[in-house]
Length: 160
Image (cartoon, rainbow, N blue to C red; front, side, top):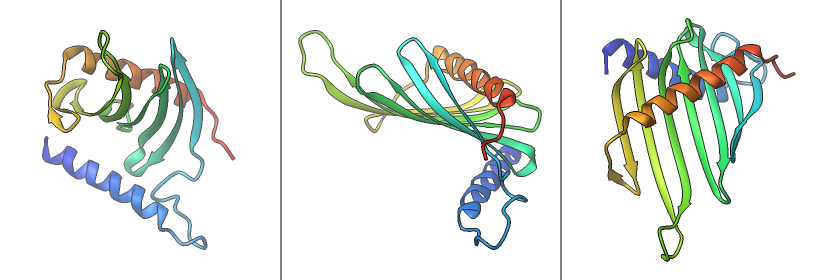
């Protein structure tokens, strides 16, 4: 991870946590846009709700909660720079899996991908706590879905 990206991510996460602790008498607009944009997305059996928030340095953060299948869910966070380039994404998911005649079981995974100039520069994946390799299709799917949400967020109108 480049030093610039690391500093930017630290600023973003600090800004997000600082905004939650802002006194009601103060304004948080210097840190976070007061009017987030929210919406829904769906494809096949996956449906989600998302909220896009402009944060420091004109970056955009999209938080998404998705459900898919009968009882699976994911929480995702996408971070874009001011030009709309994807900087990072994280996907924490819990899904029920079954193979053959085995009993269904809950599987928990966490995927983190960092990007520079549209190239994945750092990837990390854990499945039930064990490190796993990140597949190219996972990077491609993350990039594609991030762009879908970015388009929706740019079309959206701030909620009151």
